[in-house]
Amino acid sequence: MTEAISVSLNGLEQVRQMLLQPSAANLNLCMPIIRETIDSLTEVRARMGAGTAVPAETRLRIEQTARVTRQISLLLHHAGGLQLGWARMFLAAAEAYRPDGGESPLPDAARLPVAERVDVKG
Image (cartoon, rainbow, N blue to C red; front, side, top):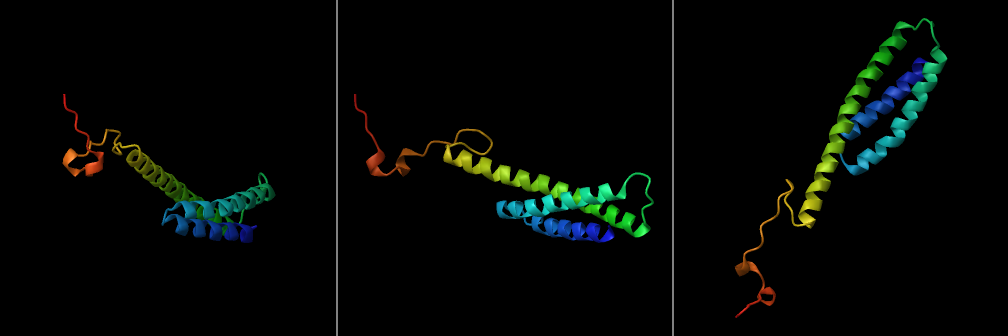
């Protein structure tokens, strides 16, 4: 049981290290490891059962796992925010808006290429 928790903890440490450099690729790489860890810890929980005495070493590993899981939760939250921020910024630029939602200023006519200038006389 302690070995399964240690393996899970190693996987979570790997995820934590990947999320310190948040990117879409790293987020995708983390998901299978997180799924495996959830399955493993669910199995450990089922084996422990209610009222079973938990050895001190196992309790220590469980506390370490909980601590790393909280850190990963925060890292995932911030990585998701970073990705969302970049997406908003790129979408705003593509749609001629500023990231804050305001309209981008129109280009000065003097900076437009000659072919794009239109004179209206009348």
